[in-house]
Length: 263
Image 1 (cartoon, rainbow, N blue to C red):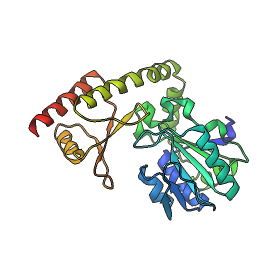
Image 2: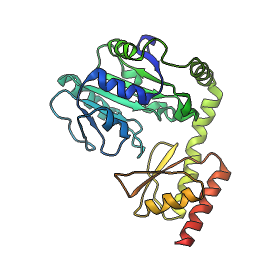
Image 3: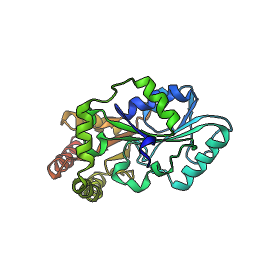
């Protein structure tokens, strides 16, 4: 990737909101997706899985992997959407906040000066340092210039840049973590299935479960100081992050067992 197609930003969430201002297009996004897509790209509408976009200029925003269901965007689908957007003067935005776990899913290599493709990356998800507020936009130079104008001269803290540079050059840690995450996610899956839950998702950093007991599970786990993610618009969904270690996974296992016993 050419350096002039990439810029650092104070978090990919900020970049999403600024891109909505720069592109000034109505949004299209998955029905189940990160809430900022809907908030930033308004007016907008949901785009069902496999649905053809409207024949006009829009900004299609897709998580890759998607949050919260972990769906990965197939390259063939991405290319078809990009071709459609380029034909109609729109843009395809791939939010790859969770893509560091499996870099082969990334569309970043497709970004080019004449393409209407923008890729967002987030530092905090994979490295576990969300509060650092560091992300990246990979896009044609014209888009980056407009973002720089909105962000001003000093958008990213020097400490974030220093820590980010150190983390990205620790290739041994990155390789080891990418190898370990799938096994840890599989262990979480076994715990969830043991308690009658069916985990979904291809991203090893989190799992989604669908159950009419989602609200009760959220409250029960919260009382045991295990925080999960409920969804106001989807009362049957609950997202669980990957436990930090074996002890935390065992604590989740015990909490779910006790919760079932308590009814």
